[in-house]
Length: 124
Image 1: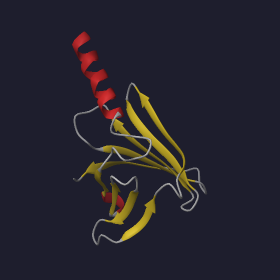
Image 2: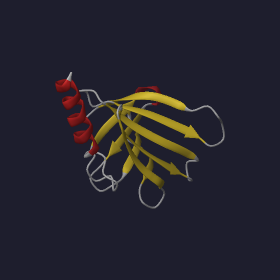
Image 3: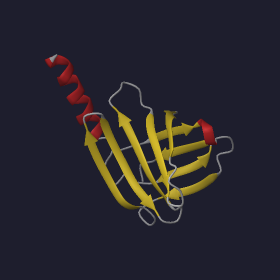
Image 4: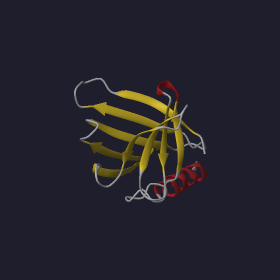
């Protein structure tokens, strides 16, 4: 049991390093197949939302339009969350304590009480 706890703690600590406050340490692309959307976290601190089928940029999240950026480690994983007034939504990406690189994404539109939850698959 101690060994399992030690491994879980190491995963949380290792994952926490992936989500730097400035977004520079998390890199990769995750796909939301429901909406033909790719979410790309890149080294220059931007999150770029594109259409998966065409590569067309839909929106770029960066320091100029992201507010309330937070990192929250927990026993179930690590989350980053932020608000964006331009899109009128709040976003939360959670990396559960698992061996795969998929993320749980929650989008909370400000105009409705119905949020959107999906597991986005790591692409590259």
